[in-house]
Amino acid sequence: MNAANPALSPRVGRDGWLPTLQLAMQEVFELMLACRLEVLTEQPGEDMLDVTAMVGLAGQLCGVLIIRCKSKSAARMASRMLGIDADKAGPEMWDAVGEVANMVAGNFKNKISGLGDGCMLSVPTVITGANYNLHSMVNAEIHTALLSEGEPITLSLEIHG
Amino acid sequence: MESRPWRQYSRIKIDLILCDINMPVMDGLEFVKQLHSADSSKGIPVVMITTEGSEGHVVQALSAGARGYIRKPFTPEQVKEHVLPVLAGKP
Image (tube, rainbow over all chains, first blue to last red; front, side, top):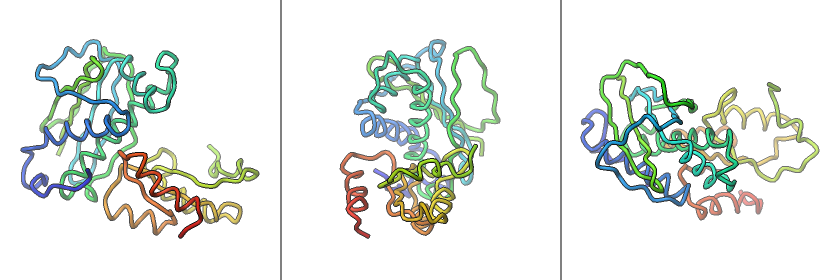
């Protein structure tokens, strides 16, 4: 699960990072939330995705990993992670999505040769509300969407350097 | 924030602390060092449970005084494998 693939080194190139990112997210959901994710072939509209979790990466890879989902999905994550009623999840849903983002970022970087030691993660930041614009110095972006219990979750890796 | 929040639990017997590395205010490695620098809490075992999965991080954590290291994401079996020996008092 955590074995780094030398062929996916940042020095070799970023081919193969998309499926690795998707796998990192699927493993986190299966192991920590007992929930299977399907990769979506079409990108969902993002106007209803009102919870955003971001984890910064610094070192050999600089960037931000971003997860966006509906409050409903965030509440389900909190329910599965903490054993609470999804309908009663309040601030716990923000913690849960932030923790998921942290685990996806960590699982991803541990799969890329050289990033395990060479890249640090920030603590997560969570934004609530869908009506905002995010501006950052992006050199490249890997973006995907997955389906969890019928609801879309988007996953982006914005690469700054 | 109280710099040593575990002091408020000094009257409770703590068998084990599961602790992340990436945390606000104080990271997990510093937490373990400070916890074990106090006479009242130096015997409390800590198992790190973190996304930082490299060998370098494991060495850092164990050097800081952690008794075990669990990489996230993890299975319940992995938690048992690392936690049960510590609870049983095995080195």
